[in-house]
Image (tube, rainbow, N blue to C red):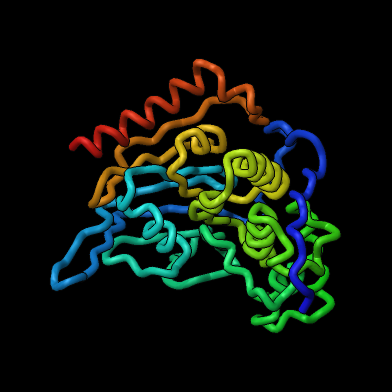
Length: 284
């Protein structure tokens, strides 16, 4: 393993600006999501608690949907159910026309809040890892991992170990790993929460660029209302526990998104609408 090194600077964005909506890549496979009557209860300290209640979602292929809500409302639990990692108490999830009852990397990729990279593996090896578990031939998995690292702006960093990468670069590796099996759906659970504000905004732009190029369906959980309004086609607002959907906000800002939009009256209106919904839930 390489010795300890000074973290490298953020990798530059490969290309200026994202293509407009007419140039967006079309989903290569059906990335639709339909959730009906989803509920989740759990037992703790001798008590049964309802975390989610009657969640209903219809997400068309290629959409960018952001989920927001008060702390503890079940946002991450919902995402884990969409990933097949947690079984709902009731209800049904259909992804790509197939009932989702267990993890299916051919349908859904997941990026967690922590990059969770193996420290003894290089960036290349970390991205290859899920392919090696599925016994994909070495030459194929090497090429696929290199392609995804290039997509997230890390060409030339394949042989770096996690301790040699900045926080933003580690999350790029994590996103590449989520994409390497080419699922039509990508789920992200507050992936930029631990980053400083400047890096967080930069990573949001990188994610939009990747989404534009790949045509994936993206479901993104965040606490940041600014991040939600900047990234989303639609924002799903959840109530306090038990989590229910209390609003669906269509974001009519044009694409590609720019920093200047954050200073517009329309951006402020969208952000305020979300905030008032969340505040009313907290007050209630």
